[in-house]
Amino acid sequence: MPPRLSAVQGDRAAGVLLGAACGDALGVPYEFASPPPPGQVPRMIGGSLGPYAPGEYSDDTQMAVCVAEVAATGADLREPAALDRIAANFLRWRAEGATDIGIQTSQVLGVVRGHAVDGLGAAMRDAARALHEQTAKSAGNGSLMRTGIVALAYLGDPAAMAEAARAVSDLTHFDPLAADGCVLWCAAVRRAVFDGTFEGLREGLDLIPAERRDQWTGWIDDAERHPPAHFPNNGFVVTALQAAWSAITRTPVPAEDPGAGSFACDHLRDALYAAVGAGNDTDTVAAIAGAVLGARWGTSGVPLQWQRAVHGWERKRAADLIALGLLTAGGRKPDRVGWPGCDRMDPPIPQDLMVTHPDDDGVILGNLVTDAVAAGVTAVVSLCRVGRVQFAEVPAENQVQVWLVDQPGANANTAFALDQAAHMVAAMRDEGHRVLLHCAAGQSRTPAAGARYAMIRYGNEGEAALAEMRTLLDGHGFYVNNELRQVITAFG
Image (cartoon, helix red, strand yellow):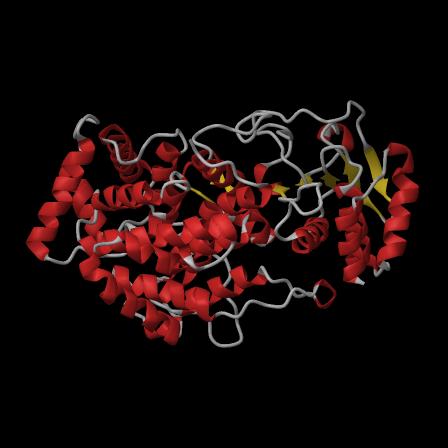
């Protein structure tokens, strides 16, 4: 039985695959090319080996999705039938969606092409073993890059997690070092989800064979002593892990000071920048780092502009990656109201809300009952859970979902999430969109984000912006909760 996760832990679990995908897409433009020069930050501009569209993720996340689609069914990834299905997904991906593929992975998949699904996992593992025996060099980074999702399937059982990580790695990378790296990284993801720390990597040393623990301890020590660029030959699993871990541990965590525009979860952004700065296999190193960073800081710590942009194979976007992560962590079971996976979320109140923002008639304040067509909107910023077709009339690329729970103490990054929501509304308005800003009832999160929007867009003072929202929405049950009020005040 999967452990019951708190709202904050759920946020972190949802961030694993999303964080990896964002790191991947951020690193894509610089793969085997020059990283951005000093003073410039990486951007999701696409190009590279695909060539990729801006925000499109590469084989790192594509293969992680192949694993996630099985993990999200609640299957035990150690079982032959589950490994068969993962292997079949790899072959389907190779035939239909691979925009790029590693040499070693390509060789292994080529051997078993056309094999029936039954027994495919064992056949693929045998092909990987044969390649390892032939070359003695099969410890590439290709299994590490896709491993983060495995941790979510075994949050309550680290020993089983280690077995599954090794089994999934062995499908294409038979060298025990590759599997060791996957076990260690899954241990880091697991601990980050549970308690929001980076202590799990060293905890994972107890899950690998005793004869290699000292060696891995030395490699981890080196990663913490040197910057990511010290490990440029990061096609090797060890140096890829070192570069990613260096980026995570050597990047300072900013102070939480919303009034100064500083948020602790900016560490995720800054550490991914550092991972890309390692050079060489930039998308893979950043994807590896992104899985642990997403587990630590959660979906709510991932910049919304990245969440809006990221997409890839099988038309999966941020909401799809979040759903795969949550269903995996929940043993395929959605929450008590059917999310994620439901077509529509039921609104908590029957009355629709459709009120024009007092400072901008291009922003509509609403709730889950609001009709996007009637509101005439072309973009939506959701501050609550929504169903898959809740706003089907609006293009997916113009819909953004913010992880923000309307309950004090239930959010990991309240100020950042609220600030990101307001800035996303501003960005969409700059693009010429008429924007629907809504939460479930439209009574707490919506006016809080509306007030923050007035602050950043029009220079309104926080208390005055809230008072303006109260006047506008008092007849609609306005009740901005105390945590959100405090956040608005902290912004100044």
